[in-house]
Length: 115
Image 1 (cartoon, rainbow, N blue to C red):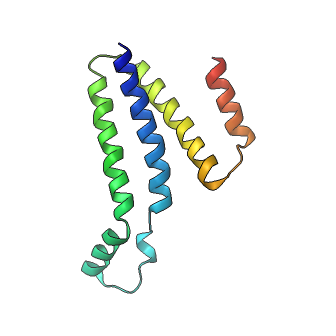
Image 2: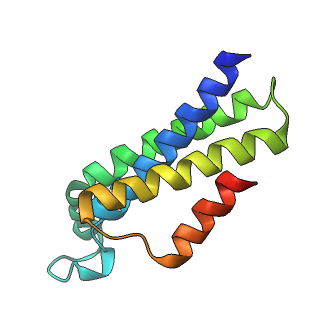
């Protein structure tokens, strides 16, 4: 039982951290002007290799999420994993970008923990 909830927290951690890291390391396809179509895609892949690695890691967490649905109800898995993902994502923003939490995020955090 505890192992199942640990998997949900792991899924939330992976989703929260990789979403933020994909956002940091993604390079926009439209910004590549120097190459024509086939080389443009190859350049896009070589520039975005870190974002692709984090995307694959994110999708592996989705597989863990789907496997956890066999033992835990859908409502509980969604609540636990998405809440933890949201909190981890905010924590990564706070640490890396040194952003301060806005009032809307603080209200959401207060509602999460007071419900």
